[in-house]
Length: 253
Image (cartoon, one colour):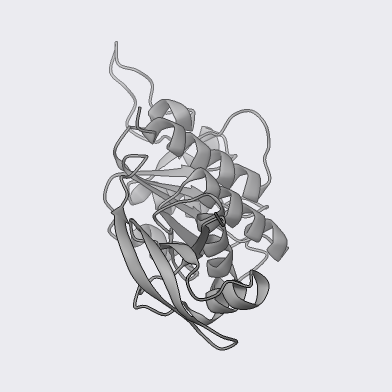
């Protein structure tokens, strides 16, 4: 029995997208009668059989619809300032998808080294990672937006901003605590404040970090300063660490 292959078809309309069709017919040499395993990126797998296969198209018929159950709770949203080198962001997008995230946004910040991102290229990497890791859901990919516009947008759930500033650089996060209450002015470790099953957005800045004014703006709009630990991390590493922490908290047991 031939190995069943995974292909991405968001429309599931009986014909593979052009790139997927080329891979099926020209690379894998699949032909009429061979079986495929499709994913729509929206929660379902499908068992299908090829009905027509040539150099220009690959048609199929659905044999079985297989809705999938989510393997983590909540909504994992990471917003990151792209690095100067594209390959670092591409690496991050691939690995974060393999680990498991729901939404990816790109931020144009004051100290950003890159202000244009090719989302079409990133989307192809997300699709490849979804297929490779057998994920039923493809992450939502958003176009780059300004930091100010992003933090001012209405978002549900918990919102965090990771940065390297000391609290005296940006001011207290909240009024001073009363006697016997915990001190909320120190940056907590992200892992300690994440809540299971809650929609969560985490902001990661560029190599030069967010500006102090950007951090203050985020705090004014409901974000909370957090730390990723004592190590100083590259942007793509910090973003991946944050995704992994959110994924660990939200894994279904």
